[in-house]
Image 1 (tube, rainbow, N blue to C red):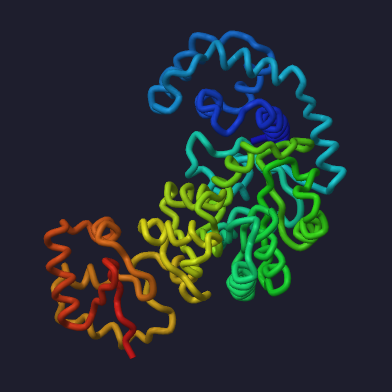
Image 2: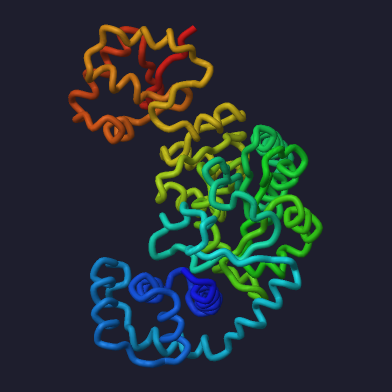
Length: 398
């Protein structure tokens, strides 16, 4: 790809990020079918699609059921109206004024995890601060989210967990809001040892850090961590954008933890997105008398989150099924000698810390439920499997 091609793509995606909203399925399909440069040309000029372009778009829409039913004509009118007031040069200057940068999917350091959002993946990422290892840190990142009106208990547990995780080199991802988000960012900045201790995902432009009461904190995040947004400079953080950005928090993290959340909270929305992406979700319990923890209790009760209470339990969420503890010497694996191939495969798939559901084990081993249950009982009899509340794990071998 030539330098000129790269510049055309960046300019196109900068313009597209002003025109296309996250839920604009037809717009995202158009980009996937025709590419950003041609899509921007069509949206900004309002020209009709060629026969070849129409065929490519039709085929792409047939592969995207969520885009079926939308009106291309209506969408084209909406795009043209928005594109008519786009000034990509002004956006570039506004970004330069705050020392920001633009990352697009065609860049080598684009966070590939965002592509798992499918037609809701961002058109581009506008950022400030450290771009170091942007494409790699989401693998070790943990989202810590919760309510804005945090209690002293919630603030304390957030500080403890975020601080301990950051001290082990993990990146803490949150939304920059008051309450739990603020506590998570502050703890990560205080103890972080990794290249990017914390990331704040904004609901508006990165040149308009919000909320204003956290301006000083977010400026520190810009200096020592990273601030990102899918919205171009100057964008105001409208209410719906907060819900939209929650999917980015979940996608940019290997796991999501709610330290304190009310029954109705944006953090519940983030947990939902994490679950949709098959990312582990943890929730910290609180007092049964505290409404501030009702959302966490709800997720735990419904099986949508694993109960976590310390940093080791949070780290266990990041363990893939079948991961062997690093501290376990090789000779300990001799206990699997004599097992059938089927039982050995299941024993290898059992996590050491967090429990795994029957469905997760079926997915990991490919065993039918009937055979898997029989193998679990044999391993339990031999002291190689433990069950608690319907979740199975492998006991630690001393």
